[in-house]
Image 1 (tube, rainbow, N blue to C red):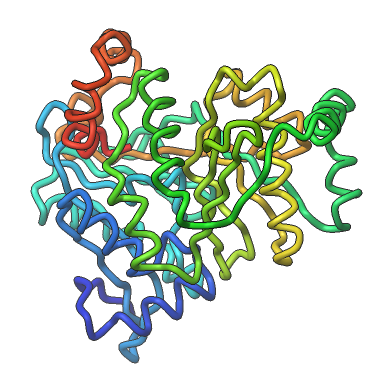
Image 2: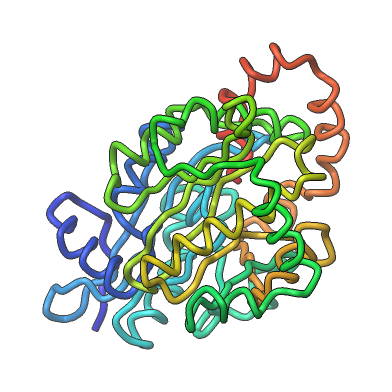
Length: 351
């Protein structure tokens, strides 16, 4: 009834139509091009076709090497979650069924999925499969307008938003010309967190390949005029959601509630755009960012990171806890070294 075929340009129109109707902006071929052009990953996308040759499900997949130089497939790196996009339950099941064969055909040490919806997915104890459920994404409902959305927040969060507005220390901008300033803040914050940052061309690629969906929100210090925070926001028509995948602030402004100001500007932008949800991104359970997002009234949605390893559990991705010494080392290395090395290393994290 269904067949699994490699992606080709002949499928592009139908692929993007299904992605934008039933999937997310991450399912589109534009995001595929961003990953390939920026990081040199090998695209290995496949489509599930029905008996009439029409696209019934999408399997976005890229292949790269991880830190252990194992050949890995991820659907998709630089996306916090990506459910199987399909026209029916049967097509969705066909996509899951095809995955072990794709891992074998591409000689992968492992293949990783990042799901919010596990319907039809293999059981974690199925041969070769394992699951991690340490992370959540947060969805802020936007119905009812600004007052209704603000009412979802805790009293403390509302107070911080009002203080930031009253102090008038910050000004919001949606000018993509501020990308250089945003990138400096982002790169600095990633170093403080112990993580490499991609090259600026990664962020530039969004405005090249999907300008109709990408928005840059930056926050300036009114006194000095410099960018002190920012978010890259992605509009997703299929699920009517505005995604916040990448962003950062300068921590010395935290005492002035910069983060509260920036998140509220993003929420107001999403409300004005008629979106149903603002996706605030991934946080580990119990973390500080988990609690911060929770105070906005956003709903925590559990993420299931499913890994298929033909060679067993030892062939899966590196254990995050084992990377702690590398995180501490990255924080200690001088900035001029990490600025140079970061864009060359991050592709191996398959983040």
